[in-house]
Amino acid sequence: MNSDTEALISEKAALTNFLSSAQAYKQPDFADKSRRLSEIETILKLDKEIVALKSDIEVARLDTSLADLLPEMESEFTKKQQQLSDILTPQDPNNSKNAIIEIRAGAGGDEASLFAAELLRMYLRYTENHALKTEILSQNFNDSGGAKEVIFKVSGQNPYGQLKFEAGVHRVQRVPTTESQGRIHTSTATVAVLPEAEATDIEIDPKDLRVDIFRSSGHGGQSVNTTDSAVRITHLPTGIVVTNQDEKSQIKNKDKALSVLRSRLLQQKIDAQNSQLSVAKRALIGSGDRSEKIRTYNFPQDRITDHRISYSRSNLPAAMNGEIDDLIENLLRAEANTED
Image 1 (cartoon, rainbow, N blue to C red):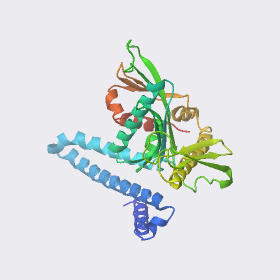
Image 2 (spheres, helix red, strand yellow):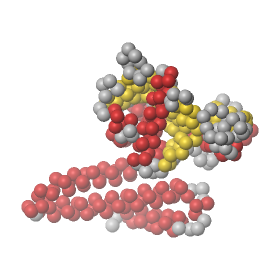
Image 3 (cartoon, rainbow, N blue to C red):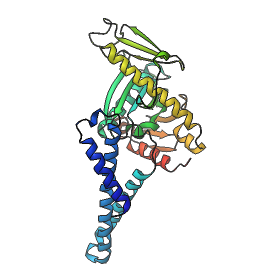
Image 4 (cartoon, one colour):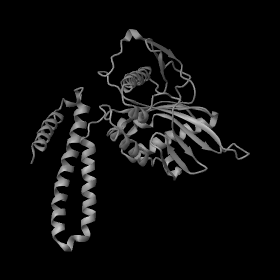
């Protein structure tokens, strides 16, 4: 056992002891320490599997009766080593944060809003497949079933780290159901992915806020149009405006709006830091400009293309059903191979 492994085992014991305390969940770093414990357990498990595979491979190379198993064992050994390397590579410190995802219809009228709703479904399916939890924070649908704007939170294992590269303009090319001449239309939807900011990440002076209370409107439950529970918060120094009316409680709507505001302010801070990165890294993460096209969904050709990494694939129906692992993995691989 090397010194690094011993240090991890010692850290694991300390974290386990802390988290088993009855008061642990009240501590502000409870979530961070829980994630760190999970990471350490994964590292130790992979390390143990790699050591065992290495031993098995050495035996198989000396025993001709095991020769047929050798290629599979070596492939698994390489895979485990890569997984361990990925975990140990320095990560974006925001990767473990919850993600706030905002989807808005862009150019294209009803077709754009329908595409925005399909993107929402795509991400919800993806999160289901990866045991991530979602919570709708705000939504605004039109009569055609399209989404004008939807904001939701994703929590679980590295949600921001998995989904941060989904930010940008998504373009769809297809024949709308309402098109009688069979012409292909181009529409867009904008996706913003923000790391959920903790109160310690961004301090907001109450004096910098204007809070307006108004009556809920649009599609909703019994309380819509009957109670003054909707909240609009304006951050005066930046002009950022956040509105929430999904909850019956004014307090809950205010809390959700503040969470989104805090995350948008954190994203501004990150964008400023990203401006100092290398050209290659900026090309991958984008400029943050909402006019920047990152991906095209071409239905007539059954092709989805990510323009940042020049990656294309077929089977669009599967992608729209949440099977976008290859896209995300290629983007994360490009991040790992891009040095500042």
